Image (cartoon, rainbow, N blue to C red; front, side, top):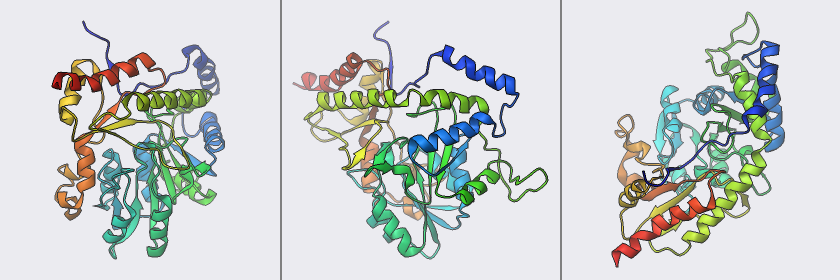
Length: 374
């Protein structure tokens, strides 16, 4: 039968018996959704934990992105990254916006501010960067450009729960920051998302938009969507929040062990931590390059034969997909660093309950081709 499979991620689940009292409260209240008690409780608890002023829960991260763009009434062109999950750019198409892809910084894999400025036209109204793998974007550089040209900044912060930069929550940057609370994320509500904003007026508009546009029982102010988080998901979030610090500590320890085991391995590049940042170890990517005995795909499939199921996050590039590839900004010559990263990345398994012995098994699988090459 071989070794048991090691997947790239597994959701962190609290003990089932601890969830029963939450279910009993939901059943007793007979409020299952529509912004009930747990919904409000989780919003307040996350604001406190993350150190942000306002947060609006949503059904999932994609709905949060769609709603954020509606909230700021974004039009025309939006500068974004091709190196992300498709939800980022799909949210632009669903809002009838035009994505404009620019290349990434080869060190952080985030949008390169110098390339952002080159791509601005009279039709540009916003920038949608991604804190890729939880690594902070150059938030100061991006905000400087946004201020000069009068652009909105919406961060796709799906990977960045709990990340702190220069002593403060990374989510405080930009006009809005979007979280995914999907089961594969560092903090999850099974399915869920959130929009972090700066003031109560903006949160009120988000509230209207995620509830069909209803301002009250008889007044509809906008063509909103059904984007409310259920009480079940919010209750799970309240329970998960009890364990988040312990889970983050475990993830950071696993990341450190990977770094120790893979340090100095020829042809394998690791992302380096950004100064003044407390990360969340949401992903652990490696980049397979010159000097390694196998190609990226050669290693990827050899690992699968050993029941190690990494993921090529993010391959292929969004810009190469049928709905985007004809855009002028999708030209491969425009995106060399993004293409290089996409062609060389493998995200290794990392989740709180991953034993160190399995981390070592993954690292041994990466080192093994050197022995066979001799």
